[in-house]
Image 1 (cartoon, one colour):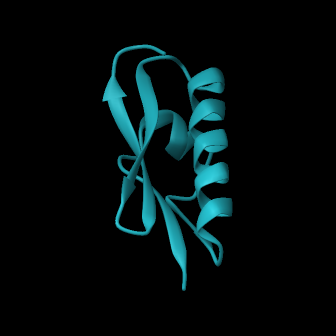
Image 2 (cartoon, helix red, strand yellow):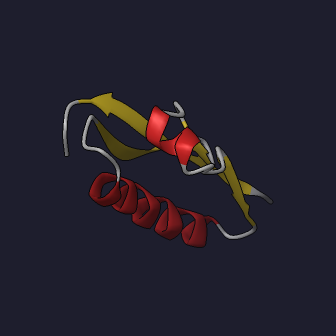
Length: 70
């Protein structure tokens, strides 16, 4: 079974860095680990205008984008 990490909203920084909006994994635990690491990296390296968090939806993970800085 495939598990996906989906970036909810592609902000200007994500588009500029040509970041993928979806990543696919065969293992749910690995997808969760990568999603959390990815959200943390986005919070630490992007401009700070948005906050990124991981939300589990069914067997997938959505990197939610909120207003405000990390």
